[in-house]
Image (cartoon, rainbow, N blue to C red; front, side):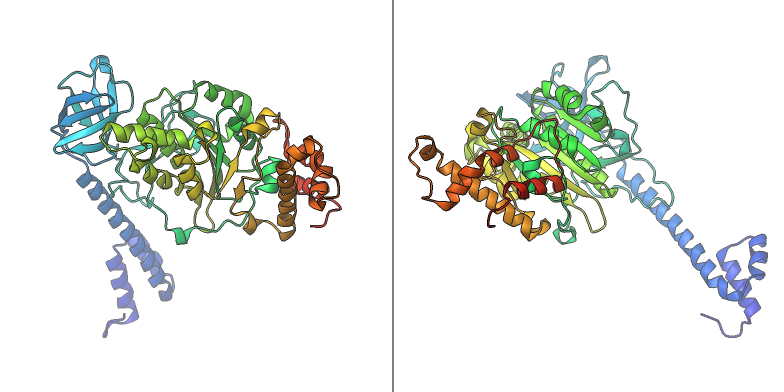
Length: 511
């Protein structure tokens, strides 16, 4: 706003003095038209505001950091739980107990009983003595860089334990705490993220609109998966779910692959890396391994860490394929922790917190905001004794966007992959496929189902041709359908090829 009584030259001088410019800058501005001065003034004000924000962020970090190192003492150790007195930390905070020879046991606060903190160790508790000191494992706070736009960690969840993320993890194998398991040296990541992310507003998510090619013919044609979809792989032990996951990891068109091996056999880690992924697949993959012999907290943390890595790549605008084997072992790890701290059991020994943890983990995946990346997730669910009504399987089926059921009878008959298309479904298929494709898939499912229900009559010769027109079609096309649904581990079938073969199998039939 122009002040009364000032001419243009005086206004020009007043503006330059207010900006705090030096003599050379003032002389340069005098040579320029006066109408350009407000724009330069705005730039200077923005620059000054950025520095004010930077100083404010630095003050905030100094306020967060404790000036003293407070220590408590271990008062009790029962089973997997340590009790500590003399220290108060929020739930989810990390701490450590120093041992002899420079070793230490890291732990996490999982609850409290009065003034005593309940700690769950991340490694073996061998060497812990009564009265051992326990210290808070503070997050290494670094002063923010000017003009970077990254606010300090003001929230409690942001000040929880941070683990490395970013492109530096590509081609690496790490455990649930971010430590390398390969022989490629220490991971030096420029960025870190908390294990528990803030929930995303569901109205901000982009809808599932594009197909993700997984390279498996039965899935691409009959159970089409979209970018950002969350699928469950329900199977018992020994029916080929790990092989199917490996095929999807090898043949998918996703930009980045994040593999979480949670609570499974340690032997599978080496096999998955060398035989399934290979050098080419590993180059665009990150493997987080927390095998069955790892502590329960590490298995729980490994699943969260794999999801955190996938979220970071999604924020970079990449399409991520997240494979987690398995969701059941994650639930079992939470059950171990919950029962150890005194939570009462509920359905089949699973405490209520398990059924709260599952959707909290699964909902972190999916599409980001419009224009951002996506996380397409496949979770394996172990159905003990092929019981589809297992509480974890039932809870997972309700919160996922579809499920693929592997049949033991198909696997025993040599049908691989042993996908039971009759019991499987993709809830996003109708949004991402054409009506013609959907008609073909329904027709094949109808023929396959009709044949399977009448297979006993056919085998004993009790069925007479001509009694059922649909069954006659199913019998005539059964061998072709069976060959169509099978696929070798070294064979890749894209979306277009899969749909073309589906149409060829049903050629000549009324759809």
